[in-house]
Length: 179
Image 1 (spheres, rainbow, N blue to C red):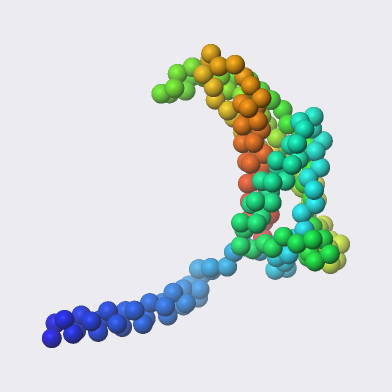
Image 2 (image 1 turned 30 degrees about the vertical axis):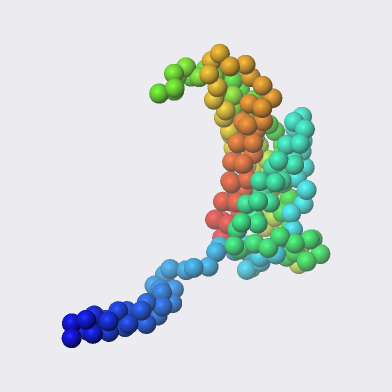
């Protein structure tokens, strides 16, 4: 008898669980991903413009931005003719800084940091309205090395990659937290 009662409770629980999940939307919880203005989800991404002296920085930043947008559930990347909004990014500056610092557990380390600055614009293609216009972004990335290590192009590339990845993350936050 006890076992039969336990099975009924389990059966009722399994039947009511989906209803509880579906009704959670009425409690202020939303399962929808943030969207662009006006519910737009079709976006075109113009090639990144590189105004720095660092070759291929535009390609690296473009890959990071594209990856973030492709993984975002509220966006479908399409060509300009099918897009509702157009995103343009210009990489304005990429500066290196070097420092030596004590890091707990590691000892004395050489730090190679890059600071990246960019601007972005987002335009509604349907009504030619600028949603964002020349909005500034700034981020940095650092590569730590032992003090005896000679800095190589690979170290520089890691620091640049980190800075540009952080810039792409900041862009995503600005696009989707603004609405």
